[in-house]
Length: 305
Image (cartoon, rainbow, N blue to C red; front, side, top):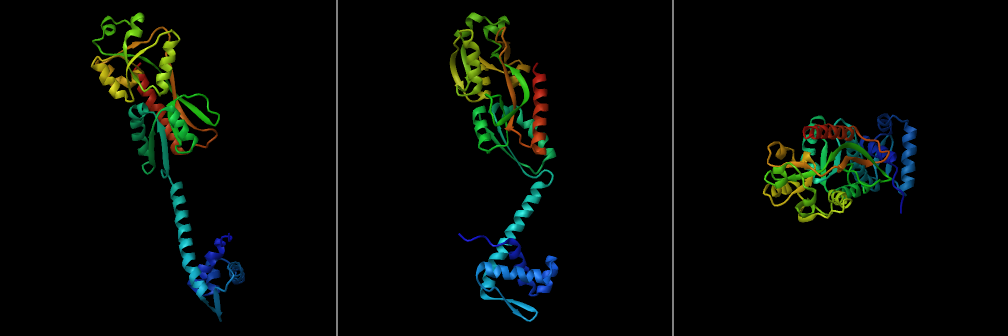
């Protein structure tokens, strides 16, 4: 395979072809005429044919030179475009931000974060990849996203986890449910309830299952769904109870269409955060996004305490 042509020689050749003069080309390149002449001889030797005819002080292209010029102009134009693109990327607010986030975070945290983020970085292209923690970590490992807003997974050697907030899981039920009427959870009745829970493949389902298994309780999962909004609607209809964090049902709890009650004496807490490559130097856009996530989450959690 032939070695690529030296880009500096190619540029000098294109300028020489345009000006038709070693003197003018040298002036434009800030080089001596001798340096330009040596560069052209080296280029001709490299490509193995004569590219220029020297007619006194004037320079004309040979047939090979004309053919090379067509390619040279395309190559140099692409290089100019590439440089311009990189310069644009370095300007304030330019670039991209690829986010992986759970569907719950997409609905309850990201809208407020992105609204404020776009005010500071209006030209940044944002891509959101919804999915559970494991999916987001896999996307991060494969460099398909820049940041993952997820529940804390098991320790990842190559990834860092920046804590955002901790929440607590509670029973979510209709105001007409017996526990809500009594304002008391009857522990003996917990296994006999019909539960409407988030996807069995999710991290949340596993932590809920593990929590009750420690008390030797097996939940009777009546319905399994991948949408928190659908879960809340079915709980409102009295088709079962669910286990969620209060901030996910903040609006419903405020209007009293749903009721939250503690799981028991032991707390079931989850930790949310942002994951990214370890030792990665975060961009200003990424740092801003993390800061906004922390601010929005704090307001969300405090509003539901």
